[in-house]
Length: 592
Image (cartoon, rainbow, N blue to C red; front, side, top):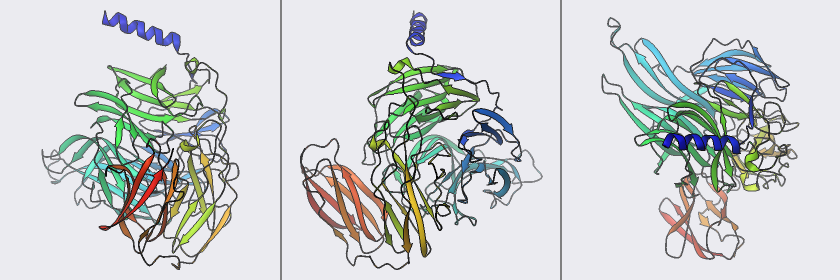
């Protein structure tokens, strides 16, 4: 009876949901990693599949020689590490530089160099991320190496686990560092996002956690751990209620368009497989919305607005109910989620959105199969038009604080993606329009986004770059929507950095918010006489915490934080500034 009911439901799904995606028939090499990126700067997305490159020639893919030794098992990622305007390749622990479409080996990240023993083999996963917010892409690596402690005994193999951050020294090399919070462990998967909108990316680690080394003493544990990035190679653990998973993945995306990144997570737990969505509560906690979605193991999951309704949908690929499956899940106005498409599936691992044919809707890779989005979903009961890029941001302002610059702008608007769902992407250069200080990985002439990601400034309409040498800098910013389309850049601005800290307050103060009374947003300004550990929070009249705005190391100077009181009732609230145990309070009035 249960089998008959399942078949009836499956048939009903096929009847209700049209097939929005069509297999284009490209026979790609089976690999574990796939990534979209415009490596040849011709304004269409190419594919990196392990060490293989499929060049996109106006919608037709050609397998072109990359000059990179064959690899199909490790992570492969695009990123402009040297800020020269073209996408380089990070393949496992090897970095290849792109010079006008020709790739050459640049650096081997020898993460087992301190071992002192012969190496048997290695496993690692890597990605580009600007950890310290200096405009240059750093490299995060987590891995395992197996070694022979006794060269005369080839059967005695031990293993060690390691996690490194390689900080990019302005395109001149990389400095190796081991954060103490997770230096002696290896993690199955990870993803970065500025979940608290403090201007620096934070780290979510998922999957099997491994540690050692001892003979027979290694441990393997499931984990889902969120770390806040406090800068200066310091991370703090955020305690929460995520399921501890293995064989899965996670992705950040603002599914409810409230201006804060939420999480979708899939994998296997001690209680079975899961596919969960956790809403960001804006106070360093997350809540499972109980979306009622089928669980997946050995899975890959990613957000993207495939139907151009302004809400992020989901593609997930993996094993569900004992079968390889790929499904697309429709986000119904941020309120609920339903399966909209069942796709053919291979055993290849990753899935990823990208508009390869530039027709204004997201296509996708699911395993080794490329699907074209036909944009005819009856799930939303209307034919969606092509996605329109956002308008360019305006109101560009920069404030110099010694060797740091705070760049701000007004929020942009978009036809499809709501204003709070937009992210922003900044470039900074030492000469007009060359992007050598902070690369947007976009075409600065027309705004075309060369990778399929949110902007490098996240969802906050501000970005701070630190440790800038003295000189004149040119900068601008674009908006990125949920279809990962980029607006044109705003009018280019200039800023002069002298290194002189002539705007540093002598005292630490918390100023009255403005406007006050307010509805629903107000600005809170405070000053710091020295670099300090800061907690800036909002409480109600009962003394209950309602929002944490800042919790981490903050540079000296003047700071302004936007407080959005969505979901709060009218009344009196108190803002509390705690700087190293010294506390200042300020009363605010919310009137709705």
